[in-house]
Image (tube, rainbow, N blue to C red; front, side, top):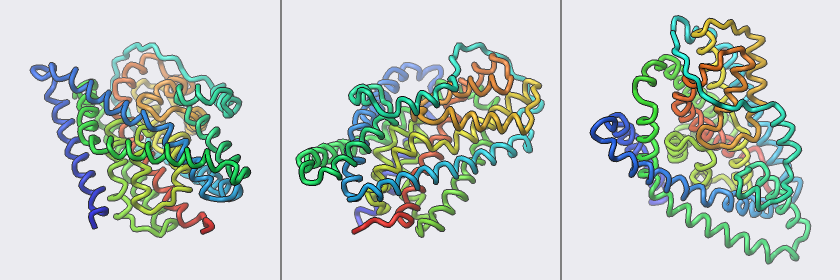
Length: 404
């Protein structure tokens, strides 16, 4: 019984930290600005503490997961099902983003004051570069630079090699298991400070954006959040219930710590340790979650597709630029290609949006406005994507048959 109460009590504390952080962020301009350095310090320490163990945990957990599966074919099934799942849900999100914002007429009658901002647009060669550089020439550099795809590829290669070597690889497997246990213990300790970390992170976000900017774009943000909420509830809830044979209400209550942390930190990568903990609480085998969750943090961009389509249509209508369904389809396809390998960190979508805005023919001056609300969009999108990652893991608990 005590174990079942832990996620809910943590959820309540994180939610409390989220609410108090928003209030502090609103009150901070003026007399409370002297708190900003302390808030930023604590927020930075929390993010660094989480990120410190992301890659050791992902690598070791994935190697142990593959070793625990016991066969190369089963590993391939888990990876293939994960990719099919994420591709299907991203396609569904793209179709939703294709029609809904135009039907709502977002941005019509809105006047935007352009703000110049120097942002380098992501180039389409990034997809080819991602494929070409998938195998790391220097694995240590991949860990140091935070290249999740290369870390995943390296872990899969090492894990499969350990399977083929059998007993000869046991000393390395034992060492990896020990490092994995250490990483899990450290993450468990960091999780105790999650409410404080989220409190400081969200306070800084609200203070930096300011209420005027948020209110000015309140309509599109409200529509965006309602859409993502319904998408998560209906699509992810349906997947959990129909494929995962798991209670929808119980699922959302169990994964709420990860969802709230993602909302407060805007980082799916930094939320990975908490997502893994939530998956364990639900009963998802390590063999599945160790591969599906890191892969989802890298390529699952459902909510990003929704955000990009909403914001492109909003700015196009506000600037008087006609966006046809055909052009919007090109934009969404381009976004899917650009998203592969994009780091799951705060602000990771800004460069992609710059490229998409250029494709849509929008003036460069909108980038300053977009950057001012990017974090507010990113918060909901990250939360939604993390829920999608966990829903995939729960579904695969039933669809992937592991040998006992």
